[in-house]
Image 1 (cartoon, each protein chain N blue to C red):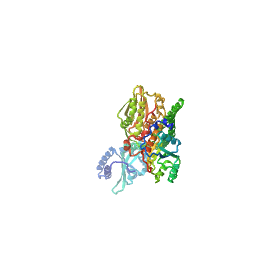
Image 2: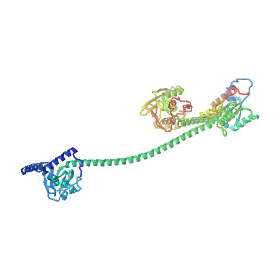
Image 3: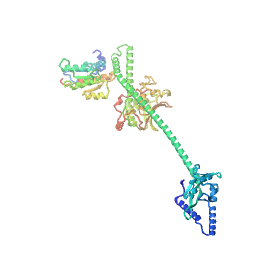
Image 4: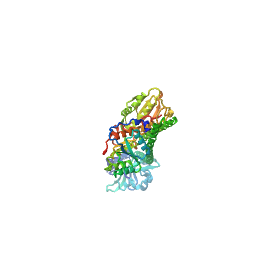
Amino acid sequence: MATQSGPSNSVRSLRREAADELFKRVAGMPRSPEGLRNQLRVLQAIVNSIGEGIVLADEHGRFLLFNPAAERLVGLGAVDSDPARWSEHYGIVYPDEKTPFPSEQLPLFRAIRGEPTDEVEMFVRNARLPEGVHLTVSGRPLRDETGAVRAGGVILREITERRRAEQVLRAAHDELEDRVRERTRDLSRTNRLLRREVRERKRAEAGLARRAEDLARSNAELEQFAYVASHDLKEPLRMVISYVQLLERRYKGRLDSAADDFIDFAVDGALRMQDLVDGLLAYSRVGAARRAFGPVDCERVLEDTLSDLQDAIKEAGASITHDPLPTVPGDATLLGDLLRNLMVNGIKFHGSDPPRVHIGASRRGRDWLFSVTDNGIGIERAHADRIFAIFQRLHSRAQYPGTGIGLAICKKIAERHGGRIWVEPQREGGSSFRFTIPAKEVNRNDYVGTKDHSTDATRRPGPTRRHAPREGVAAR
Amino acid sequence: MLLGKALPLAEEAPPRVQATGYRPIEVLLVEDNPGDVRLIMEALRAAGRRLHVSVANDGDEALARLYRYNSHFNAPRPDLILLDLNLPRRDGRELLAELKADAELKSIPVIVLTSSQSPADVRRAYELNANCYVTKPVGLEQFFQVMKSIQYFWATIVEYPGK
């Protein structure tokens, strides 16, 4: 068996030279008996005291020398036995500690057959050495003057420590490998699970996207319906209004007073219906507006809105104040409608004091938070959600005119921009309408993206405004 | 005009620009809605009638009348056409295109008078060489005002070919 991991080559060759020298000395006998005895005594002393085991046997396998170190290492001394049974007798196996070592492969056996061996590793365990030892053994044939092999010798060294260290190392290595394998198995299992989860999530997302698409489509259809319906309603409505007014113009005061009342009711109803249809059209237009978003300077939008409202402000004796307003991604016309509706509300629903309206803006994380705060009659908390539904009104038209579409439009505009809107009743009276607009444009699939952002942004709220509710359509 | 006296608009009749050679302007009104026809008539009467109006209820009828004039039958050639866009069968746009493609008829001014505010309709009408585009306003007061302006402008200010 070849050495697996031994000393370096140079050390090994030195050792081999030393062994050769020893055997030469022993073999080369001095001529005088006295010298011979002296030499033998010296050699005996050396052989008995060195730490390495030395064993010599003649060509028949009879032991000539079995030094104390050798006896200690193999546990048993020289016993005459058949060389073919040495392994069995001394309990010699391969370094794996179990495979029987064939006797004819033992270095001593091969030495007396004339074959040198170097550092053959083996394991010895027997009754005297229940723990067993690992040995490395080198063997040399000993020849006479004619070159015939007369004996063989071996040197034994214990390498149990090294073997044990190696075993521990190997065990550690194996364990590490086991653990790596196990971990790899775990990882690939986790991986499989993750892949499955990803697949399922993708499926779920696709389903969601489909549902969102369906919803967007049915919303668009609904808006289209509202638009067409209100558009087509206008035509017969124009007839009703015109003829009722013609009736009024031509026959008011010519019939009895009941007839005049009837005509008044009919005119009033027809005009109100016109407001509703206009409001519905404006509401459906918020959804129909597919202009690309661009940066909107809210200061400028507010300026325009203030000049639009200047008559109403003057008439109500209102004072309007505002914070510096940011530039946000959006649709300038829609944001103008949003601000105008809220401001109209603030002016319209005032108490005994002249209306004061403040427009505020501050950054809240990813959003801009706008507020339109008034000192008006306020809103009961119970109604705070209802007021944003279409056609919801909290007051009779005699108290405060309006159709109940203004805030529904506001809600739709805020949501169109990826924001939301709500109202906070003020403790000191009045109410504060709040809405958020994302500071960065959120991903909206339902918008047509164009590269024309800049021109859109600089476009002033244009003629489309004439369709939007000017006043009197906001409600609480 | 017993009723006319009660109408405030009638009292604001536009001044005559020229006192000589007066004859009513011949108008062909192409309008399918009898309510609108009557309303237009009322408005013109309130403004002091200076236009002589005959009515065609759709594009086909309008063309029949106009071609009859072309063939020198005794229908009067209109000086002016008031045209609604949304008509049954041949609609106002088709009629407009046909008129403006006819060598004899294309010189007759056409006023598009419709309830449509659609920018696409406005653009298309002018592309087809309409002479002006007017939206019917909602509300009697506003409608009467518009018709009064039309009457004033086209009956007292405008010159017509071959008149």
